[in-house]
Image (cartoon, rainbow, N blue to C red; front, side, top):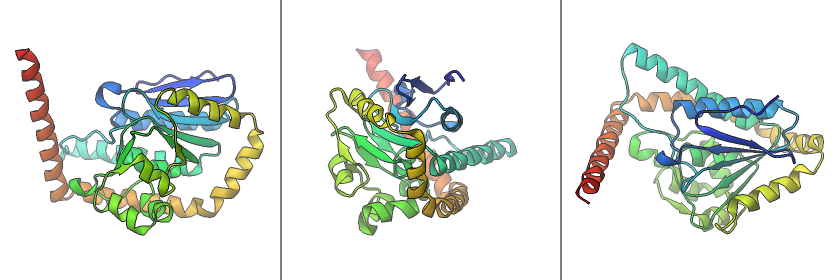
Length: 272
């Protein structure tokens, strides 16, 4: 099978068997809209099925890894609610694919990461990042809740107190802090970061694919069903939270502030 092309992702399959999946919306800091989630799901399913792929590297193009979900004022019409339900189902499927992904999955965090882009790091096998990367899950500001299995995995990996700081208090963590708590394996120099991660992935791709898949299955099988249940519950609760009056107003305020900043920036440029 040939490497598929996507509107929001850049896929590169190297002769070594390493597949790079890059969020490719640098002008909007790789924000995750409905199309990104769909493309991400399709890319994971293709990578899982294609025997030419041994190791997958997930990264971002530009300065950001991802700025998280692209927020918009909720459409409360029947058609809008139907679209929201479909999107929620795709989001759940992305997490399920990450939970069950049979091949080695490496995340290369090339810059700031927010929200869903942070929570799903816990579902990767290895995470590397640049020294200036930052990590935040500003769910409480928007009246959301934990997602991406972070309610289960963050306390286990980071420890309860630090997990609660990032999930409940919205504190931004530095690269060094994420290394110290075990979420990130190590930082790599920003200069040549992509090449360094790809080199590490290519060394891994030299091993037997079946041996890699067998060992990953042994590591993950004890948690697989549990995490799928966690994902189901998180998505259900997230739907409830996003339809709450608090969350809807918070998103309206966020969108209005973002539009105000864009207008001010545009006006400033017009005066130059």
